[in-house]
Image (cartoon, rainbow, N blue to C red; front, side):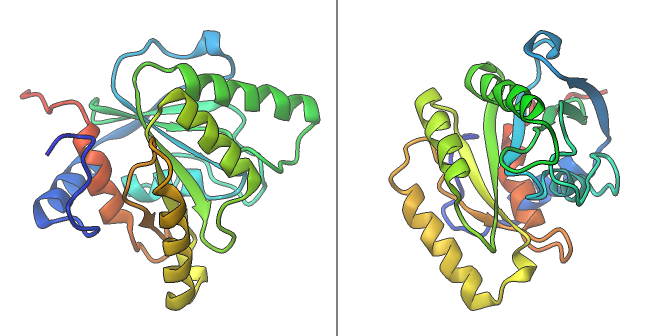
Length: 223
């Protein structure tokens, strides 16, 4: 199975789950923060970016995937992440925490600046293999999400929708939301077919997302 091919079933098999667990259990460290295109680190390792509206849970999801409590700083205050933060996972994969788009407690000038930075990064980063587009399960797609999706489609950047805060919905409502999103994505060529429903609080979907991302990592070297 190639890195870009999803499992034949929506539930990852045992081997994929084990590979994901092994990768994300390894050392993960902060590398750098970039406030401009000029300050981005040189392109090297494969990158997976985490994008979404302000306060959708990007930093919390990165912490959940890596099993850390405060690797990426999370906050209840929308717009706290104002730079692009890079984290090296086992020196095999870079996890990229992007500033949120949409509402944030910041000036219009600041919001415009980091929105432009995110858009430029998503459109032009040569080592970006996948963007995890986080969507709050309670609200589904908003116009700002669809704008980002259109941009990724135009740039031919593969993106995978990850539903967050799924513990806030009852099973029936969550299934309906997931089906609604899945149907919309069928029309989008750059959309990764598998939608993962997650909850950092309960741990639901975390192992499945790890399994989905692990094939993107650089080969493990013998030390």
